[in-house]
Image (cartoon, rainbow, N blue to C red; front, side):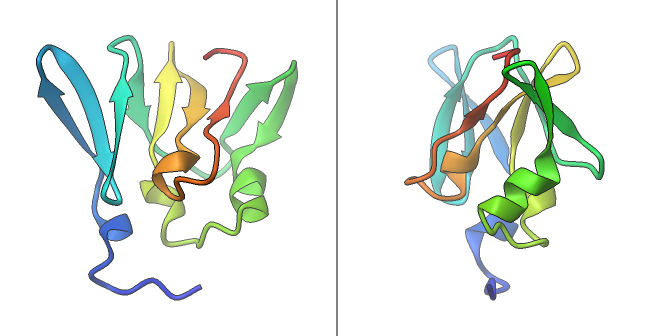
Amino acid sequence: FIVPKNSPVLQKPRLLERDNTLFLTWNNQEKKILSHYEIGFWQEGLKILKNGLHKEVSELFRGLQIPMPIRPLLPILFKNKEPAAILFSLWNHKTKDFLSDFF
């Protein structure tokens, strides 16, 4: 998978506030974010809890064929320092977000 250098996926995500509502924009996509979530990013070894089992986030990325240069930029919502949701829909609008047990 080749990503052009001017692609919007290579830009850092931005948080915008409109009408007392937070929005996360990335890759020409926008998603409403509740204020009790923090925005974070993938780091090597990060795991997310789903149905009582920890899943390697890198395995989820691999399964969706998300290129290595994109992985550190794809937004992840954290709640109390735990990954709560991986916002895959901002990468591909046809892909559902991965929601953890903390979501």
